[in-house]
Image (cartoon, rainbow, N blue to C red; front, side):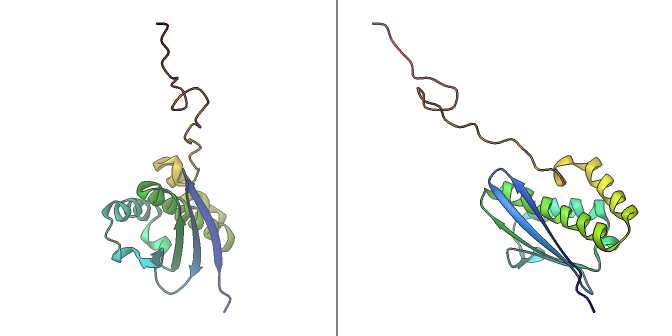
Length: 143
């Protein structure tokens, strides 16, 4: 039996996530070597539950996912992991199943939230000379 595997990545601010989707007998999702059900973060579970509802449990029941994240804050880590998961599902269906099913899932995800598949390009503006931040300048006095 050939092992069907697909890798996808997601980014949000400075957080980066890599998802590996593998065909298996049952659904399993590990994030940083912890099963999703064992995570205590309720926001993480809620964000992934939204994606499960949109994609559909029947489309995920034969897949196993392993997501590794690094960098970023707590919310950026969740968003990057969610994006990597969504991209991995799309890539898996595009490579090993029908193009129609892939397009259907992709349209549903984009209709729900564009950032489940497209990375957010907003970044922090860098500090400039002459002030404490990006735009503010040091105050001057003429006395």
